[in-house]
Image (cartoon, rainbow, N blue to C red; front, top):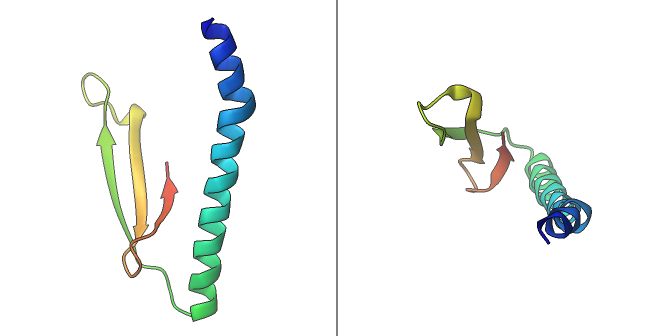
Length: 73
């Protein structure tokens, strides 16, 4: 049962999430470019692993003028 779930997740869910995310970021960057302004980013990171190892950290980058998330790493 779990292998079916992971197969559907890999085949349908993640491609859909990636498509929406790429549309979101390209629209945000296009609007910033059309406005002719530079991007000012604020970022934050978090570690969810035991020992708080930066190897497993997640970072979020947000445009400070609009509050729109532009990247997750």
